[in-house]
Image (cartoon, rainbow, N blue to C red; front, side, top):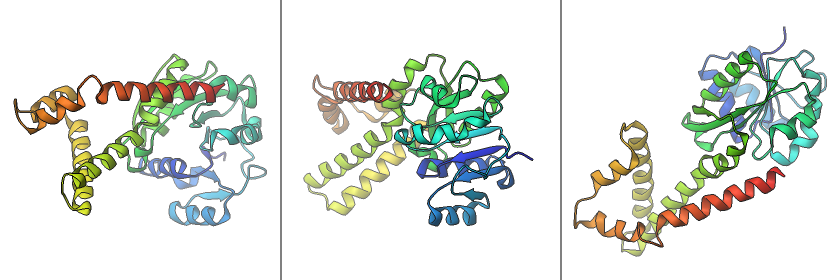
Length: 269
């Protein structure tokens, strides 16, 4: 029997997917993993009970329902053609940042069904935000399978216009780094205001994590949550007068997101 899932590459994001699939009911017996690092391969086999091979040759002879590429974008030119033999039977799901559907079709053949996705690192705890775009050859059944695979690690949104994926990468793909930087800067500011460094770090971490959890569960927009914390003339209002100034956080983030969007377009070619 052909394996249902073939995961190619199992770094941090690949393993997050593998863990999520197990939680979502995909059995270990229907999943194969290609991981050339023999030490890591042994760990994965023991941890998840899946079959792990070092390369594609002879490991998966029959076409799986889905081939998931979780390798670095710069490795795709060498990796993807090894699985060209599975087209048009398999759907090829790529999470390689910046690699367009057209570039993958050139590597996999004109009949390949391709889905391009951009998840982010909170997928490691089941709280990822992923955006996906399907190629023209992808069937509804294949799209539904990719829906299950990606939704296993968090929220999933589909777009029809692939050009949006550059901005998606800038907002959600890179976004966790912005939040981590906020926690860093908040801790440093607390220490500068006189707090012991360790306490400042703990307060910053817990505050960012707690505010994120509150935002996720809330049914009101972030702006209303912000207003709920802000008393007129109070301490929060004083801080926000700086953060919301002409040279404050909003224009800074717009420039940052635009820089990331521009870079994504360059990487995509």
